Length: 239
Image (tube, rainbow, N blue to C red; front, side, top):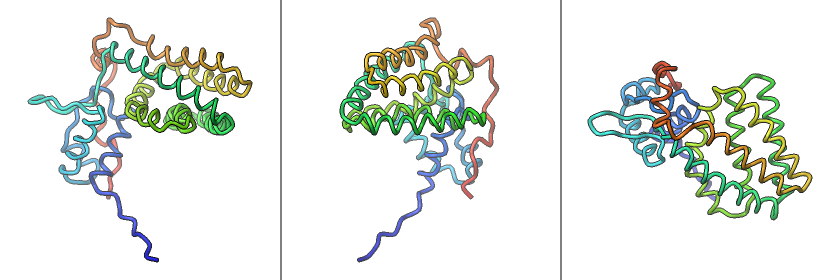
């Protein structure tokens, strides 16, 4: 039997992964301008694969290309943040209900593993890893709900949600309360208290919504006075 040869990732795919991660982890902040030349230099590749990666990120909603102005990391108004939170509340509650009903043991095991890793990340002061685990916690709902359409739909907003999570990590109380609620959700699932689980989840997502008011027209504009430009060497070279 002939085995398939695994092909290496294309330069465009590598650029896509690196730039997407930089946006999600906040190395490229919300609303920041993007330069094809600078991105290509930091990755050690030509501008062509970077251009392809930016086109894909535009389709994912993480990048905005403004004619005659340039390319920018996405930004959201407060109203858009609220709309995303409403979608999250609906999708996550439905997926979590199904996961509890269909695969509770698997869900508990998955959430417990993530929470244990969260403990380690917090003890080590590793905020970046903790935020990745925060996303992984919520993705467990969809991994165990038994409905791929829920997972596919949620996957469309995960990058923006993760970027917003990083954005809010600058508020220590937000992250601390979020961490405590993760543990509370797991505990309530173990005790088979689904009503309690849903109350905690709703409160958990509501905090992101309440972090903004409708008076904020644009997140990036509101932040512009408190941050400098992103570093040029935001991602490692592919060489």
